[in-house]
Length: 159
Image (cartoon, rainbow, N blue to C red; front, side):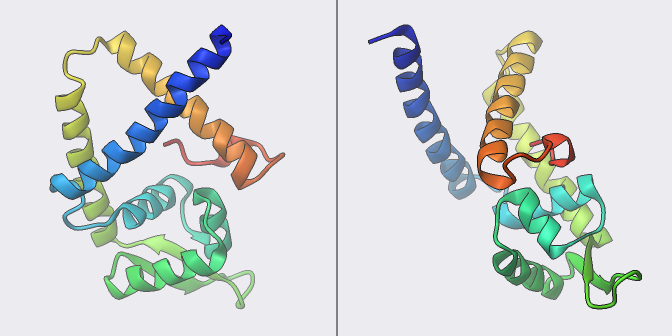
């Protein structure tokens, strides 16, 4: 096995375990007490990109517009987001987080950060920075391939 093949084999297993570990975090902690994972990501994306239409929001997180629209409808019912007509095109709706949505997003973010700080407390700042850079690079590669091929990722939320 080549060095690249061996590294990819380790990475393949590590990403499978990482996905499982995120699910364990969701089920065994209070991180997502007020928001579920999708609500959190949609609110983080709206916070980063500002008020946007459902299609843009869907594209930014890798959902089809109908799925994002259903999630936005649920979030509106929970008063996490508002939906207003676009002033330039009355057929288009603009989605924005509410104060309550931003507060719950911030609370969830703080819980997520606390769990990460606890789990990675013995890592050096350089190790954390390197891991964050490589994970971001991986996420950007996935986004480039599957979200909007050919489009610059400078507009994408940094996850």
